[in-house]
Image (cartoon, rainbow, N blue to C red; front, side):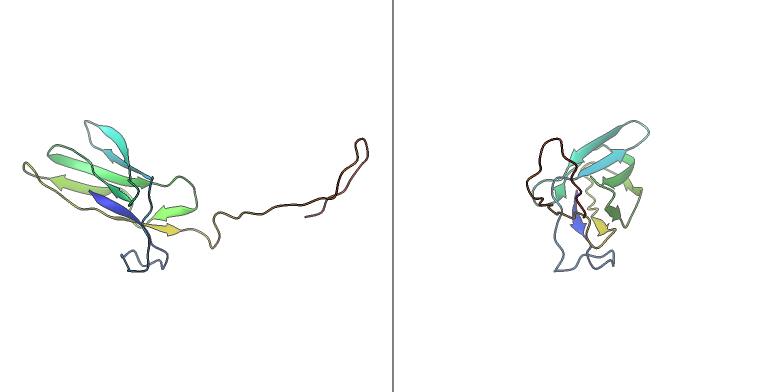
Length: 117
């Protein structure tokens, strides 16, 4: 179990001002299995697995985020063993989701118009 956190100050640690990231995927793999689970609305995930060695990765839905830790390896020993593993995701740019609109005057059919952005 764990949580995905937006590491906006780029220190790979949880800080009070940072927010959680909901609805992202966590991939778990071992020699026997490979599957993914989604984080809930609070950014938490829970992976039911048996004893053994597993590799965890947070899967970003876009190239604008990167994890502090790649291929996090866990070794679970004994029935009911619980390990908390948080993923700190860092933004890869100052404005990853730029939103803009272009307004143009009415265009006439069959006439050439030039629009500059």
